[in-house]
Length: 117
Image (tube, rainbow, N blue to C red):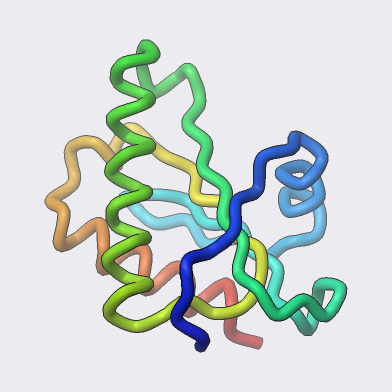
């Protein structure tokens, strides 16, 4: 697991590709979808995208949820590194209310599940 700052997924087509082809891990704090290099085009860099649906709340609530996901990812990547591949972190209602240490634990668990074969 290389430890570097991951690239970003920004285009809708990238999110849709992960939704169709990627593995999925749903946990109380978030949903993670991912494709590892064995499934993808042999890339060596990690790329990450974040999304939160309107069901979660208004723009302020969604942005706060996204910031929590981004910070959890930053800390997990700093502590353990990220597996190579593309990942989408999807915020849920529980993301906002979940204790931060539990959120980080959910993220670790989801990344392991999605990147394992």
